[in-house]
Length: 395
Image (cartoon, rainbow, N blue to C red; front, side, top):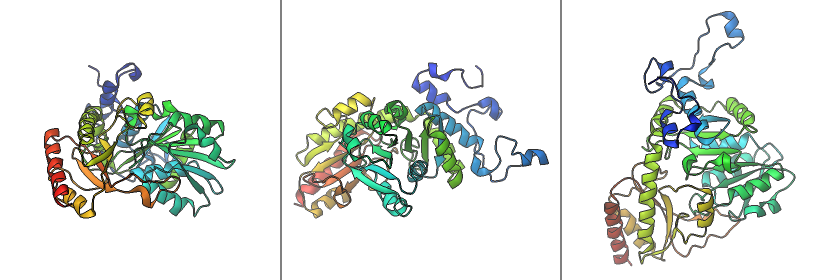
């Protein structure tokens, strides 16, 4: 077997490409993985080399072999012209937005977006003269009615960060492109494995590598990939910000990349099984999961996606706050904490009512967002069963 990368990797299956993408053992003295390169200073052998910046790297912020391995692998996986790495998912999103909009521009953002996205639009973009309008995530091709001459981008997220509405991304992209606007997508829920963003009309795709790429809840990382038309602007903006990911986090992400599909498939299997189990519970009003046949967004999910992740929501029947606390506080296996995508199961309460502006959030009861990890499903169900017993006792 050669220790150089395979020729024409596109002819291989996805699992094979995940194993080999971004690796070149011949450039690392035969070692399987690209090692961690740390450093700021890069030395040049001559005056002429220094003055002409001759060499693959010229400073720590311009990259390293470790960073290049992940960038190359992610670009191959997403079908992008290029990828930049940032220290968090939110940082990846801000670089994407700043590469597209300028003072005086108009931005359309789905009302179901990740809340820190809204905070960035209102807290930073507004100060720089960018106006943001939030739109109904179910608008589809009707997005054209909201667009102006100054609309430079439409931000989508499918499904929504907490409410799990499914957006018609190709439909929105067709209208946006006809009007000269870019489409930016937060694709963290599905990852490129289950939703190839650039094939579906997305110009710039954002992923929180903190989630499924890591799989261990032990790193902070963002990835922003762009098609050929938007790669120069994205790369230029990234260089101006010099908002670089840490070498150790990039190395951990490369390690997680090799097993991401296997883990994601298990999260999907367990998540769907848990969602169906919760659907049958008398304490549950409805389950928010687009892969379920009776979900309002199922037809779009089935058309555009090849899988689902372990993250979904439920709406409980109305209960007092004390009863909800009794359910959550006594759980043994479900942790309460933000983020998701690791091996462990998580649950948090959520309520979109306080910040949605284009649509009304009236679910009929309290919401819980679940991430189903890799524990035994029967143990997780028993933990929740005991929690529901505590909820009923506190009524």
